[in-house]
Image (cartoon, rainbow, N blue to C red; front, side, top):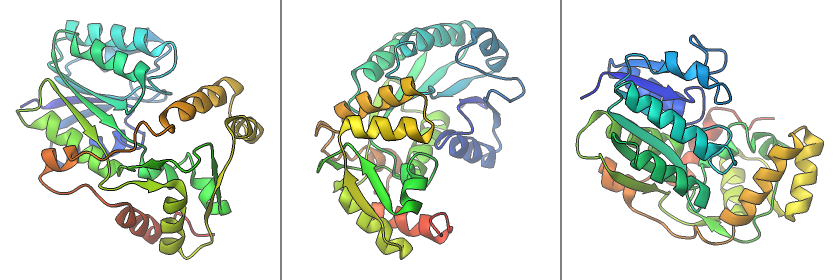
Length: 273
């Protein structure tokens, strides 16, 4: 069992939960951020070296997403550097239905050290943290998703799986596809959130062009908005309309249902006016 962990993206939705769970086990944990000590920036490879010093295993997330053009080269360079520093296990957070992400998975698998891939569906916490939080608070979730259904996965489950994979034997060389236990449309998700929060929340389907224009108007950089729109057009085309049992396979318990996520999120007051 390894004892020194690097959590790349340790302030993000999954990363901070992974770091917290590892610390609760008494493990040595280093998290990365641009303002951290040492600082870490995907666009500055000189910052990677200090982050990897004396690290046994890495929980690896990539910002902004594995689908961006520079991701594969960065993941390859990071994996090679990690191996050179003696890292024994790389656990990659990946996206479901993304060919570019799958290319990054293959890079990690071929890096020459232990590896595990966590290929995840749409995060339930996208509705309660950052991405769609303001939309939910405003009562209208506008996305280019049509009537497609998604097995929304709770990031608490992802973190539990990641920690299990990092700290227990038997997961090296495995690809786990993590989903929630049932399929919901975005309209279904909005209804669940409305019921849990006591607020009027609805889903409004829009075109990809309308979504991109609204994102730019809201302040998202045009390049990032375009990448997001392109990603949504692909992963929300029905290719991910299936449920897996991998959360239960790893944890020995069912994946968290969206109703439970919505109830727990509402109890924090995050959707309050």
